[in-house]
Length: 115
Image (cartoon, rainbow, N blue to C red; front, top):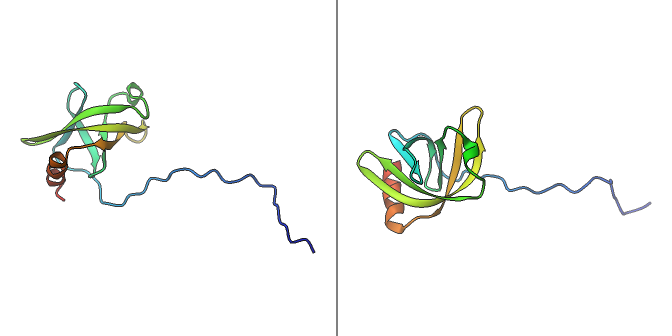
């Protein structure tokens, strides 16, 4: 009886899966300005990134780095993020992952998020 088994199926393509290791969600009055743009409502926020409402996600290229300003009430920080996802349905916006943030700004962000 043969011991080699080959089902002739192609190998599965391994893709990165987004892991949500910490809570994220809506933070009241949290707004982001991308570049010199107008402040936009943050739809989801965590210590690692944001999903922000934009008029046209196609204005952003996946993988691009953008400078942002995050503000809540009278507190604001700046950091650099990478555009990692664009959506048009059910909500319209872009997902931004924090690529670089100063330690002081990171602590401030934790306070803004209630962590």
